[in-house]
Image (cartoon, rainbow, N blue to C red; front, side, top):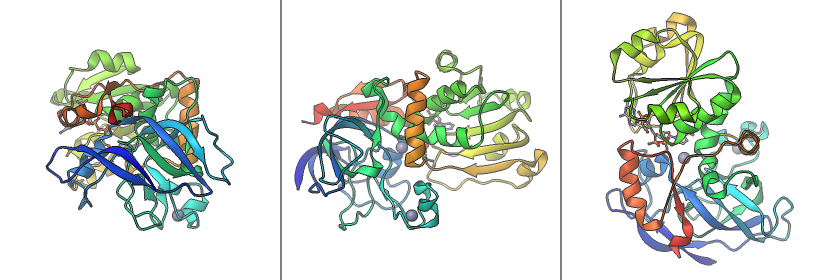
Amino acid sequence: MLTVNAYAATSATEPLAPTTIQRRDIGPRDVLIEIAYAGICHSDIHTVRGDWGPVQYPLTVGHEIVGTVTEVGAEVTSHQVGDRVGVGCMVNSCRECANCRAGEEQYCLGGNTLTYGSVDRDGTITQGGYSTHVVVVEDFVLKVPEAIPFQAAAPLLCAGITTYSPLAHWNAGPGKKVAVVGLGGLGHMAVKIAHAMGAEVTVLSQSLKKQEDGLRLGADHYYATSDAATFEQLANTFDLIINTVSAELDLDAYLSLLALDGTMVNVGAPAQALPLHVFALFGNRRSFAGSSIGSIRETQEMLDFCAEHDIAPEIELISADQINDAYERVLASDVRYRFVIDTATLA
Ligand code: NAP
Ligand code: ZN
Ligand code: ZN
């Protein structure tokens, strides 16, 4: 066992605090990664605050991890010591169910092993990336292309893949009108990626405060959803809406913005159930869908796409002692556009 420095939540209400956690001994298929940077995803906050259900504390969260391989097990073939690698939201799956066999292990029917807060095969609870090292089986370790600045690469491992996957699945591209609801961590990546795919991109944000940023990130249009006229003006417009909002939202109002055969994909994961009236789907034969991260194969495809198109998240680099302040800013929609922890400050 390896004892490593980390930051952990001890309850739903206390601030996160420095601690140490244990990493397992490196098995024959495992890779030991010295973590360099870890992104802060809103899911980390939902989790530690108990929004999604009970949590076993203490818990170290963080599922946007980049680092360097420092040791590999005897049977590892895909990674070498010194490689720049990444780890996202999952670290294993059953590998046997229909969805795993189809290469969609994010939808593992047996329940995949999440990077934090999951029961691992040895019965321990997985601990995430706000730490200095992690041990992961090689198949769930991604290669981070040299073209992507290392500290900015971390948020691709969740915010990047969670938006790339539905944009690719629902064919965002030339001739398609795509709206992104919420310009936070996921939203800003959705704008960059949809723009690079060739779609006409509209940001739907609570206010016009971030309009200049949105247009610079690649949006063609920007509207405030606090202005009721926005919903009249944009009725029946979009082929695809990606909703990244972490809180309650009037789904019917957003569905009314879909054009014929349009789809609204929810990736935002608020604590509460959201009401939806089926009549909102009848007009224009609209669809409402969900999407969870992306497969390992697709995550590598996304990383390579971002390298090719010169896409990197916009980040604010912070030290570990700023994590709690960063959480407050994320909750206040005051993130520009992802906080990334320099894990050297955990030492
Ligand atoms: P984030 O950085 O906090 O961004 C969320 C954005 O939503 C905010 O910046 C804000 O944008 C908007 N928003 C917040 N509160 C709102 C409210 N009350 N009404 C309307 N808009 C509001 O969060 P994130 O890290 O991007 O994550 C977003 C959500 O996706 C979270 O719920 C997270 O758990 C979930 N998630 C899901 C997956 C998946 O696999 N499906 C993966 C990762 C994350 P504006 O200021 O522009 O309005
Ligand atoms: Zn996440
Ligand atoms: Zn499976």
